[in-house]
Length: 250
Image 1: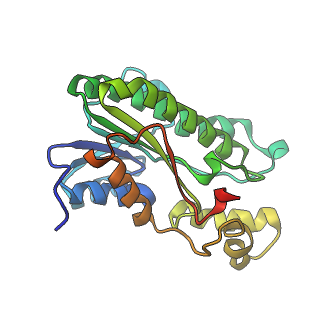
Image 2: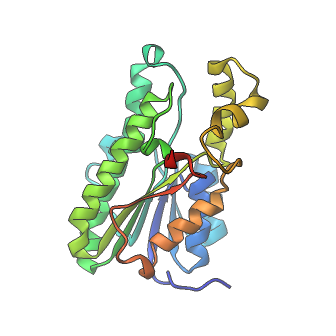
C-alpha cells in the first residue's frame, strides 16, 4: 500500500477523467487525498470520481467567464486539461486558436487565482501545470498549442514567485508525447498534414527528437506530479521538469 502522505489533502485535477489527468487522480487518491475530477465529460468524470472515492466537477473550462468569481478550497491544483489542433498558421481558424488559449491559459490563471487565497491562509499549497516539451521548444503546425504552453510556463513562474512566501509552490512538467487519447488523435492529424501513413507518424514525427524511442506512459508523468505535490518537494518551485527522452537537450 502506498504511503498515505496526502491524507487530509484536497486535490483538483482538470481533465481528470482520462490520460495524464486520470493517472494523477489515481496517484493522489492512492496516497490518501480527496480528489476532485474536473472534466467536460460528465459520465467519465463521475465514473472516475466513484472509482477513487472523490468528487466529480463537470465543467467546460473553456467558458472562462464562468470562472471569474470562482473560489476553490483545495490544497493541490493540477492544470492538465488541454487539446491539440494541427494546422499551418495561414490556415489556422482564429476562433479555434482563441478557444485553445481560453482552455490552456486563461482557465489555469483563473483556477490558480481562485485557489491561492485558501492556500495562503493555510500556508501550504501545490500547483502543478502540465506543460509540454512544446512549452520549451516549437514545432511547425502547432502555433496555438506552442504559444499556450509557453504562456503557461510564464504563469507558473510568476505563481512561484508570488506563492513562495506563503508556502505555495508552482511547477511545470514538460513531457514529450504521452500515450493518451490526445496523442492518438494527433497521429491521424499529423498523417494528413505531413502526407504520410499513420503508421509512420510515431517514428518519423513524434520520436524524431527523442533519443529514447518510445511514448511516455501517463503513470510516469503522474509519478513526477506526485513527488512535486509532496512535502519532500517544498523547496522545488518555479521549475520546468522535462520528461522527454532527451528532446530538449538538443
